[in-house]
Length: 460
Image (cartoon, rainbow, N blue to C red):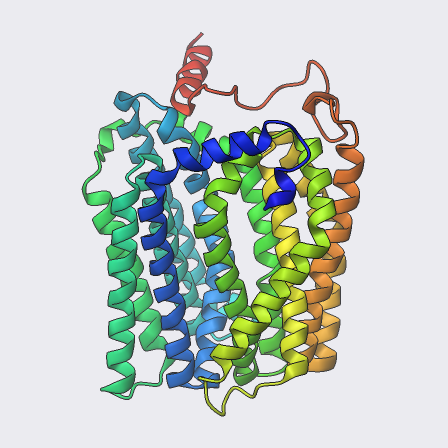
């Protein structure tokens, strides 16, 4: 993204050196992108073969699972990305063991409690108890999958995780194709079970080569891990609800066939965006954001907003149009709906860019983003509900676009004010900690070390 590297002497040279230093990542990135593309292709295969109603059921379960995963995972994968690389090799078994056992206990507890209360919770969400139980089981498998992947990435085993992702994605595609083409199965639950099994297989193979020692589990370390991931969990909870509850609204006011069509117009472009951004430009962009001066970054993002939104919208429109032509009559193609979807995806990309930039500014940026999400969520949810109740599928796409436009307006205004002084220190910016206030984790200090310190203080 040239706008982030222009206008300052030496920045382009540093960016070139950064890219040269990350050439080792080209192979794993390509394989990981191929794995994500294979997973996205499997979704399209299921959508076309199972039909709009079954795919709507699949999407509904997945949407609930994505929200529940936030509570089960509590951002421990994010913590592992940070802590494992900077921890001493002797401390890593304790980190892995504590994170894994805590997640297993919490996730299994949420699954058991949710399954027991499904007859009461399900109707409140507009789904039956069986659908909710499937969503909880899928959430647990996704939680373990993401945590296991974070272990491998945190230990810098990039080639292994990339090839494992590709192998598992290919297996899921093969099993889905066999069920559709040979057995003629059109029931969504079959593909949900296959997805759950796929996630668990990935997690089991990934963890098998790690040093998991039950005796290494540490209560103090567990408290430190959860405290570290607190801000990210709050952000994930807000975004999980904001970009997941629209499917529940649509299921309530329209029907599962419309949910399936909506997923193709809205869900697939978001998935495609994730593949391009996360596995593509994010590899170089994120390290650059971590070291760049944040006020300057925010000003350049503000200048890039029109180009990013328009470019992503055009890309989404073109790519989705191609895939729609392959889907068949159950997924009616409309230029107007596709344009509305593309506009929403463009605004969503801008919001994601602001969100990533703020997250890379540590605690002050996270606090500012949480404040923006807290301010925008009630209005955004009311907008989505009103739009979907009024217009069904069209209203859902309009509500998604308006939600992102609203969030971009709030975040852009807040960042312009908080980062208006190029030399402002995070501690003096609005939303940052006051002088003398408790600080977040010290840069370079591992969670294991903080846990030891906490134990010493408690013992004293």
